[in-house]
Length: 372
Ligand code: MRU
Image (cartoon, rainbow, N blue to C red; front, side):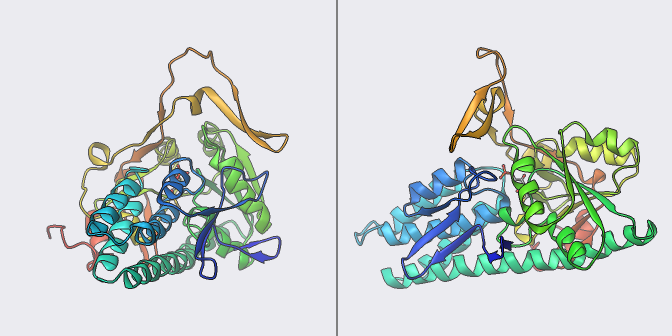
């Protein structure tokens, strides 16, 4: 996407220097900093600390991590075991987004299909590039398939602004290009539809107020940051026409894991008769898990992210204490919205209902484990 007129992605591989570069999302919106990732440890730290984040992007980052593992594993007898061990460490960096394990496994299998070191590195690089390009195209298509949903509301409102609420950042920063939840919004805006976005701030790390607001602002899209608890009130007063979120892992039966607080938005949307759509590429479906509430691993992060608030001061990232320093705090990073609260999925293949049969009908080739 364009930032101040320049095309930029949140990750790219510079083949001249042979270095993976990422936008350091911890520093946005206050500083636009690019950061090199040159070791597997760099990859892991960047994923754990949310310098790179969002399900499709951590998948792509993990895939380049496999390439770095192949570049740094040496030429000893244990080269294969070292690469496999590094891949396990990368997959452990964040547990909820299924894209990470999916992309690492896919890249590892292409890598180990080759015997020679140089061929392995090339295979890993080609696969990581391919995943990155495929995710960019998936998100473009999500935009096309989501457009009619926004268009229909706009027509019903005789062209008045369509108010869309979103949670966290499921924008291009999380996805290579376009975003998932934001793709239909960008497409609608670019085609001349009047849209306004309610941006949940998304405590504790404020991906909404820091990243979604920055992205939308750079694209010229009208938006308003709200506290995480404001959505229900806005819905009761007719100020939300549509909710679109992303997801980190969606079961084949339609249960949706996404940033903590998404479930409450879905409940409020249901109570107010407002459509609640989830936008995702096929890489975010988990084809092995049926019950999202019991079986999707929910990341528990450092409690200090809750006790403290992060900001940027004198050119430095800093935190200030909000709560009593000795209060217990719990930092559940994701929750699961049951399929019954989801109006539909917007995917690269089209829109479907949040049910096993509809998901399977749209992705018959990707769902081999599902009993018919
Ligand atoms: O903890 P984060 O910032 O990685 O969480 C990201 C989200 O919850 C997004 O909504 C999700 O990854 C969808 S990505 C398009």
